[in-house]
Image (tube, rainbow, N blue to C red):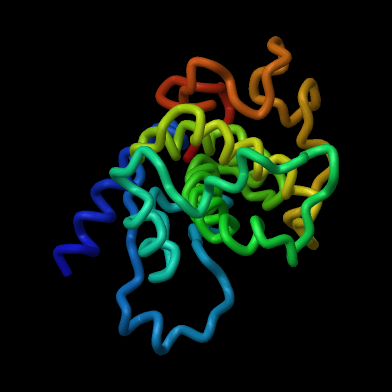
Length: 208
């Protein structure tokens, strides 16, 4: 119980800063995971009017990965990302993908669900916005700035592998989904900061 509560308290301020509103995080218990038949890593409920709860549900495995990630400046499973040739598409059977992807996706899920609490319902849009806040999320959890930026760049290159409602070809610099179209930097602005945050982009959290 204490481990779960401390993880939730560590993640909630990060999600809140991304969302631009106060957000709570609920980590699934091990028992809950054992009887869970749903296929998802995180979840935010929207009411009939499209207003999201200020609460993020994260599965046991996602919280466990984020707990292991937090408080460390370097993560050995991500070391291979520094030598990836991003001019070539990464595949699911790439050894580096197999090693690093679970950590990368855990950070993505936290940021992705934070955008849902800010009122973003479209999954592909939430994915794109989350990619632009992943460096902030990673650094806020303790990752070194260069590693945090690498995580975001990695997800940017993995977006084409997304399927169904999570896929978009518009998550590029200068597009309508670029949270900072006035700069050429993408997906991470330097110095690293939450792409939305308190008082951030107007309209995202309005009414939420």
